[in-house]
Each structure stands twice: as structure tokens, then as C-alpha cells.
Image (cartoon, rainbow, N blue to C red; front, side):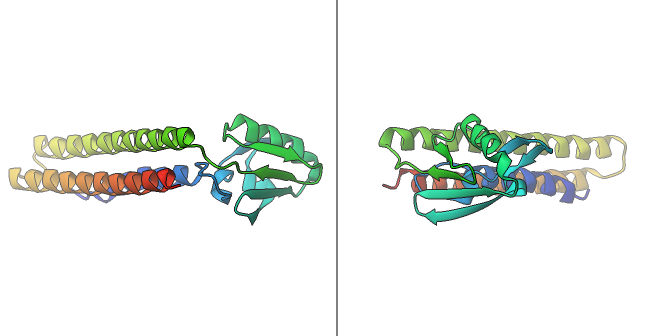
Amino acid sequence: MDITPFKDQMQKAFNYLENEFKGLQLGRASTGLVENITVSTSYGDMKLPQIAHITILDNQTLKIEPWDKKECASITKAIYDAELWVTPQNESSHVMIKIPPLTQERRTEISKRVKIMGEETKAKIRVVRQDAMKTTKKLLENKEISENENKINEDNVEYLTKEFNNKIDNLVNTKSEEVMKV
């Protein structure tokens, strides 16, 4: 059995987690904070980078310049709705976001959220693992593979699952340490 499709699914789940971590507000300006925000525009729903240029002015300030200046209000609303713990300022031609420093309480809250996101990703990995195990069992039942091949497939899937769980744990630990660092 080729485990590549299952590995690809696990990699997608891991990549999604990495991308979600970029959107966490960690007390300093980062374009990743707003890149995944969907804005309702006159052209339909679009991701923020598709309708505006995002610039980091300094460690605490983001500037968002929409191609169509009429979209500033929509961008401001979308940022509020995203609950990023920031207050966007609509300057009519652009939107400014001042990133407030994190309190210890907020750091603890974000760290808990990071761990929850990691567990959710591990759950996705377990679902892929179950699918892979069902596939190899079905191949065995249909006599398309031998007992030995089935055992090898199961071992490969287990190894892959452990590998991705370790990657997730390392990413979660690194991000938690980064969040808690004052």
C-alpha cells in the first residue's frame, strides 16, 4: 500500500496549524496576523492580501493600504470581527493597526489556545491514521496483500503518525515558549 496520500493529508493538517500560528497576536507587528482575514468587499469575499498591501511600519504598527480606498470600512469591520485583540483605525485611505503589548494574562490565554490548536491537529492526524488502517485492513480482507504486507503497512502508518505527532508537539512547545517570553 502506498502511504503517500495519507502522508500528504497529515502534512496538510500540519501546514494548516503552522499557518494558524502565524495569525496569533503576540504583541508585535506581523503580516501573518491579518493575512487570513476574509473581507466582504463589493467584489465578494476575499482574503485581505488580495485586496490590500500590508506593511509593517515598526514592531507595533501595521499599515493596510487597499487597492480600492472604498474598502477601508470593510477591512476595518473584518479586523474587528476577527477578534484579534487589536483596534484598527480607519484613516480613509488606509487602515492602521497598533499592536498592544501582551499582558501576562493574555500570554497565558494564547498559550492555552496554542495547545488546543495542537490537540485539534493531532485529532485530524488520528482520523487520517484510522483511514489508512481501514484501507490496509480492507486490502488484507480482499486478499490483495499478505499478513506480512499488512503488518508492514500498519507499522509504516504508526511510524508516520508518531512522526507527525512529534512535529506537532515540537511546534506547539516552541510557540508556547515564544508566547510566554516577555
